[in-house]
Image (cartoon, rainbow, N blue to C red; front, side, top):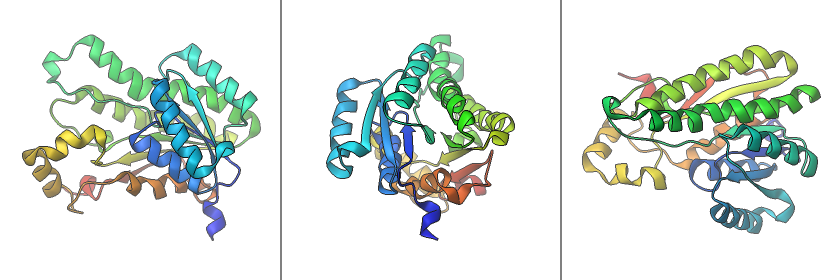
Length: 256
């Protein structure tokens, strides 16, 4: 049974993985045996993350690729280089994302496009380039990191909500076109996760109280809560699961 979740020898690329959720997922995949390629746009931060990973998993198991996931030319070049220099990309985790909090009437077109580009368009760009290679081989896994905002909405995060809703349907569109070629494309939707980026919300008594009351599990999620589901979707155990979004949210989307 454990072989179903074994990722030994597989190469996984995780975008936006120099910290936070992406870093935790990359570490989980490495612990399951995968070789991992970390990605980010901040070269210094990416190099530090890579050094930490290599201390834990070994030099040969960890690589770094610094490129902008919203730049089509950089994406195409980086994916081609990984395929040539490191190995075939068997697992892709589209994790790169950002948040922008502002009332919808006040959001500038520039900020709207910035969120859509990073949170949605990047998954299209990176996913498409990786799929070109995976389809030729007849196998591959793509995991798009969605959110509870894939299904829900709150005031002040309209662009993020629109992007994550679009990411669910991009996952379905990828499935409609690529599942017949041996790929499994699914989404992983975290609930409210306690990270460096959400620390200010955790520290806000009113917001923290709302989260604890709104979540049946009665707590914030942790990055470790996402590791098992990510390994599952990356592994042979999910070979007949396609076009689905797995919510890891403590039950938040299950209740009113």
